[in-house]
Amino acid sequence: MLATGAGLAAAELVVGLVQGSSSPVVPVGQVFIDRVPRSLKNWAVETFGTNDKAVLVFGALIVVFGVGIAVGVLAMRGARSTAYALTGVVGMLGAFAVLTRPEPTLDKLLPTIVGTCVSIAVLWYLAPRPASTPAPATSDGGTAVVPPIVAQPMVVPAAQPMGVDRRRFVGGAIGIGSAAVLVGGIGRMLQQRFEVSSERSSIALPPVESPVGALPADSTLPVDGLTPFVIANNDFYRIDTALVVPQVSKESWSLKIGGMVDTPMEITFDDLLARPQVERYITLSCVSNPVGGPYIGNALWQGVLLKDILDEAGVQSGATQVVSRSVDGWTAGTPTEVIMDGRDAMLAIAMNGEPLPAQHGYPVRMVVPGLYGYVSATKWLSEIELTRWEDYDAYWIPRGWSKLGPIKTMARIDTPRKRDLVGEIAVGGVAWAVHSGVSKVQVRVDSGEWVDAELGGVPSSDTWVQWVARVSPEPGKHTIEARAFDADGVPQTEEYAPVAPNGAQGYPRISVNVKPA
Ligand SMILES: Nc1nc2c(c(=O)[nH]1)N[C@H]1C(S)=C(S)[C@@H](COP(=O)(O)O)O[C@H]1N2
Ligand SMILES: [Mo]
Image 1 (cartoon, rainbow, N blue to C red):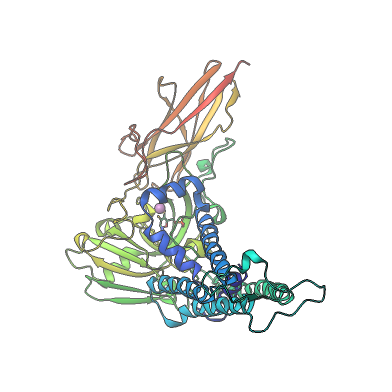
Image 2 (image 1 turned 90 degrees about the vertical axis):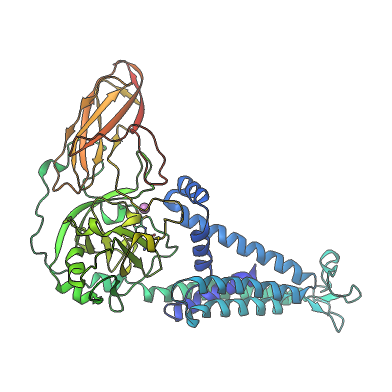
């Protein structure tokens, strides 16, 4: 465990010294994320929610330390070459994972190589080796020979006693352990140099051409327990496959636009700031949001309309799919006609009046009203390629999700949260039919008559809406359901469907127990 810990710590130090390099733990976890079957991924998300990544890293560390223990046992039993070899194999697996990531370069391998060497060196230093001379007695009178169980050699001939100087071992262990903690900590501190937080806070956002202005006063209804109309950046759900948040400097950032276009382009961050800016409230939803789930949010996005840029590049006929790629290789495929149909599909640089947070795609991401994130909302955007549906499948498609991902019309019940209630109940929540707009929300008790809810105000049809309905069921246990209608009066689908392959459906439902007054 010491050898493993020291190796990981050394790797962290190198990551802190060499910009763009990566600790092997991250790509190993990333390869795992990219390869897990959908059922396991869904189980992890359902069980751990957005803590799934922390759980994965924890699991990976348990595995790595488990192997470390096996290596240690081998080394203590005298099978030192096997122990070195196994460490080397683990290092090579790490290196292999690093090389599978986008843009593999040799300096990205450096932490893995250094970490593996340090691990082997610690093993070499701490593990007992064949005692050529009798081991010296220690000052407290005990012998410095390993206890019999440990001394049973597995690989070396049994006649050779293994020597381990206990004092040297304990001293070495304490020294190496403390050095590892220190080195790992310094490495982590140095890594902060590469974070974008300081350059991000120094950006002055350019003014927008026509500000959206104040929200309608009734966009927030006076009902306890409702979700705020605008979700603050820190509370906004985060869904992506990135095990560590990519730190992409605006200085090195550029967006390549190519494929089936007349004029391939490359745009810098400053180019983007110099273009006409728009700002729009847009509700973003994840296809993995279950009925009643939390993976949806509404924010004010600022950026440049994607249509204008694609018009400049000149989209060729037949280019039915816009593939957007992020710096970490993730891709989304969006219908060209949706981006070009006049809605406010944009390259966003700001969220709720601030430059994009790193977690939400700094420096530039896509936002397309009406489509689930997995087919449109590429964060840490690096490339846009015009292509055809039959020529390319984006990240989630081979993993069993639909090529097209329009957001399904849906209501969510956010209040009441308590089960036991008395008297009249204010049932409320949010509802969305993104880009169409919600025309009506209804509530019913125990499959009775549908009752119209009061709707809050909205700045556009691209956002969710708050709603509240008041019902007074008799004392006893009841089920309350809700449903939303889009602008054409089409209600959300009643029939239940799970999130895969194209988004959950069904009525949201709560159970309440009304007590006599
Ligand atoms: N680079 C990258 N962008 C991505 C993803 C990703 O995994 N990688 N996930 C997408 C998905 S599935 C969703 S729902 C939205 C979520 O955006 P948010 O984390 O800002 O809420 O980002 C999209 N953009
Ligand atoms: Mo998503």
